[in-house]
Length: 156
Image 1 (spheres, one colour):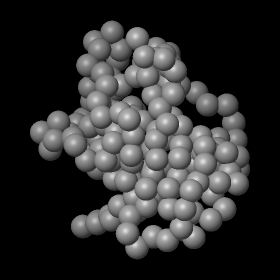
Image 2: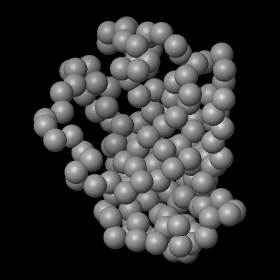
Image 3: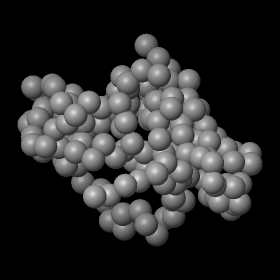
Image 4: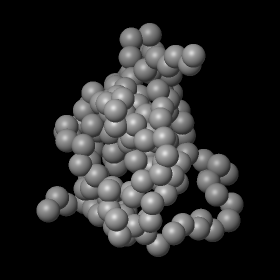
């Protein structure tokens, strides 16, 4: 058994789980008790961080272990859960690269975190160019269509 304790929690104006319009969301990651401000020292020297978090509100019955149409859209091919980034993953782990806005004590303010208010955060890592792909990224055309409005700055 693997047990993870949250290192912090998301404080966000977003409470809804809809898929799009995350680009302008400014959220805070507040560290959990037991983590002093020194655990964030130096992180604000980076422009971006990768945030690993838990989709803690996904019901057991909603977990997907096989293939499905992303977002339930039959126009897109049925692909395995590991070929998409949906929240109904077996271990409910989310990952997003965010822009670091500022750090104040035990709070990291970020932009573009697609996690709702109260979400447990399990890790934060600085984004370093050397850990990004060293060659062009390839992805199927349906994924570009799926992501078209995901980072849109304004709500409809």
